[in-house]
Length: 124
Image (cartoon, rainbow, N blue to C red; front, side, top):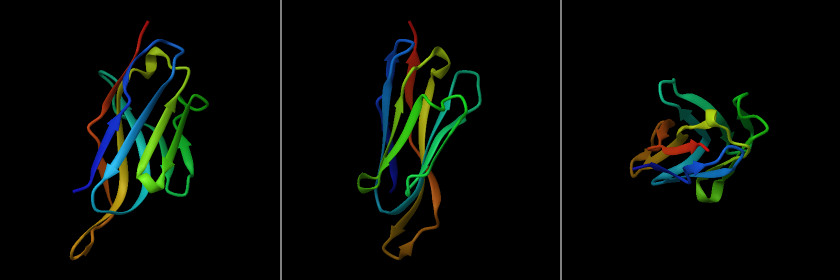
């Protein structure tokens, strides 16, 4: 079974930095894209950054120039480097990945898998 596990959340002061990691595991044939999302209390979940297996990236306007997404295809892992954090970045951060998995009988359809989330709190 494919699983995504995030790590690296925590408490940081405004202006500080934090790095998140999302590792995928299981019967993975290929990962097409990996995406970071976040959901602040009382708000809808929003897309933060996406990266393709080829390295193409896109970011939400609110994080451009501050956050950097990267991918290690050999490790099926994506990273989110977050700099110049502010209180509005406080949220649960989720990782998702569009993955083609496989079973003994063949490939499964490409589908999105989600991690359990990691809390990021920016506070003085």
